[in-house]
Length: 342
Image (cartoon, rainbow, N blue to C red; front, side, top):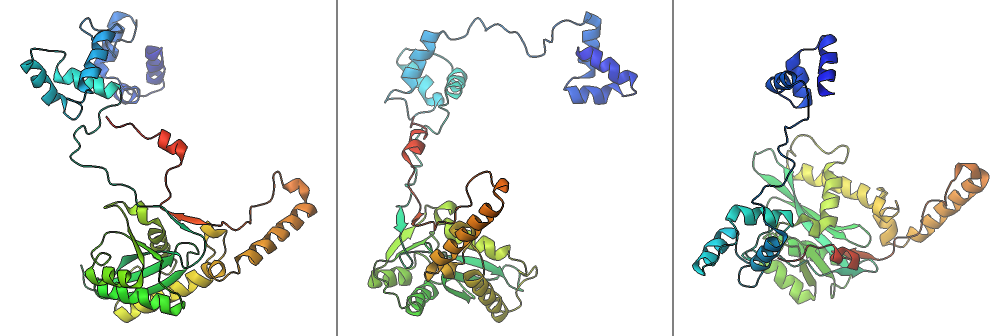
């Protein structure tokens, strides 16, 4: 069939080399097939098992040995010589590697890099309970130097409750911003969960001392795991993809501050946030969310009654989203899918 297709393409004016490239063949393979008068495609080797293949019993014994307490933390290159010292030879290193690959056990076998535990799950049932913060880099006119945007986000309402732009990263600036945000909202900081990554300003002595003095619960991401601070990452993505975000560097600290101020005003009071049913963070933070969503529900119900043939299902869900979790724990069905330790 392949030779017939090649002949049809040649008859249509195509050259042999491009045809072979498309089919994954070489010119020499096509020539050999013509000399043989067709036949089976033998490019993929023999279809029978090799004579020296491990038997089922040998495979089971080998897996039992390499997963035993004595050898389960060792690579095959360490296992084979140790077995030889005991007067036993089961298989070569390459065979053991191949067997482990087939059964899905080619993971790091030595516990030299223990897995980092997920941060604790935090539940926000209202504003002022769980905050997330981070620092974003804003380009300056000097290559390699930046302005630093400090931003604190309320996880429940998505409201930016505090922000500042500085010329350096500092735990002092971070501590001052947190205190200012609490003062602006007339909020007692006792018991607030403040989540961040593991940067130097986040774990600086001034910042940690301030949080401890105020009774704030500090929470930190795992090293090099950005998803543990997803809420802050999300607002920074919104900021840098906002129409009007400068394509050139900010020419001064004042210019950067002015632009961020306009962004925060838009984000808090105008931006319909997709994660909170398209109300603004201010609407949710200050309690206007329920009335807005109830009005939308009535609008949709009226539209459905007016033209029912245009609605195949129920109307859009305009129920408030309720509680919000930071770093939610894996559900039981997800835990069942986690790979077992070798």
